[in-house]
Length: 114
Image (tube, rainbow, N blue to C red; front, side):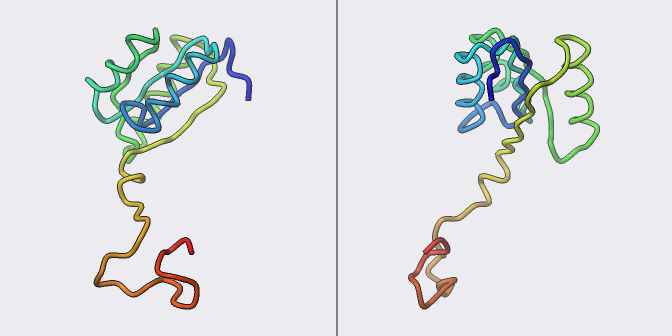
């Protein structure tokens, strides 16, 4: 998708993949990158150098998401792309079982993706 001249929102944008996406959208010419995260200081730290906007947002609370959408559209125009990268989802992903767990697919290997 071409984001040049468009408004982009990234939740979970204060670090990790979300932060990298914010920076990439800025380099690609987005008119405004909105960095929404549960960590307001982290949101500001990412948004400030890219000329973006920072919002505190807990994606587990619908009212927070609706607030980000409403304020973004009021201040910057329609949202062209909304990327949801909540850190809690990334933290819950495991790439291999713990030693106490049996392999998920014993016939094909020890990892859940093998």
